[in-house]
Image 1: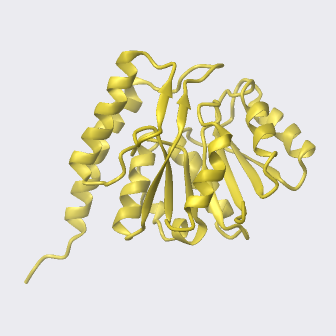
Image 2 (image 1 turned 135 degrees about the vertical axis):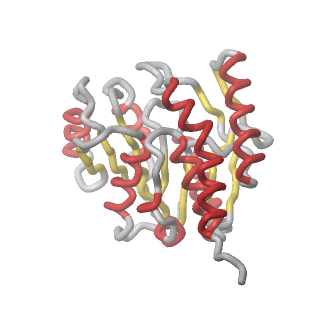
Image 3 (image 1 turned 90 degrees about the vertical axis):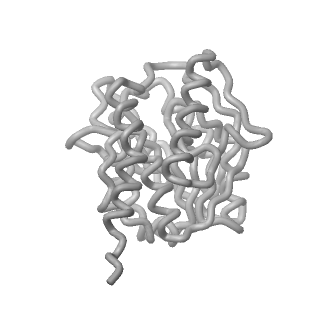
Length: 242
């Protein structure tokens, strides 16, 4: 890899998965990690501190104590690293569903794109260990999001992404309202409005091996209404013709 990268990893009760993920990321000399722990009751935050000492200078930890949520974790994490001297800032789940072996390809693709998405739904991409109902839900969600928002990526809900640092700095994070997974869609919507260029790289997504899914009815509801909220906000922001 020619580019330096920082991977932001939000965590909540991922004590079993985090050491495996961090060890795999540390195999890339150009990569550093920021763990953003959401006050995990299982001790993930303390374990992250141990990893920061083990990989001193390459792993940092942010301990959040406010309202929980993936979106809030990412906003706080991104704000804290935008001024670092790295070429690329990446997003990655902590449950081992995002294989670090794909990271090299995502980072390389930032040579010709501002935002690179690790995509399950382009040729070469796939999902492993999901039941048919979950596959259908994910496919439907992406079709629904693209139809409402007119976003071009085929996998708008993927949380495996790499951004050029300057491109990410142009996204108005302060305007984000999403707390859960819909934050991922909101980021792409803001990136599209900013004129950023997208690319998708195929990944093999593997369902978590340890721990519990964070997908809840509240998360699904927020995800359903967010595309309409984003479109409405864009229309409201347009100047009135005279």
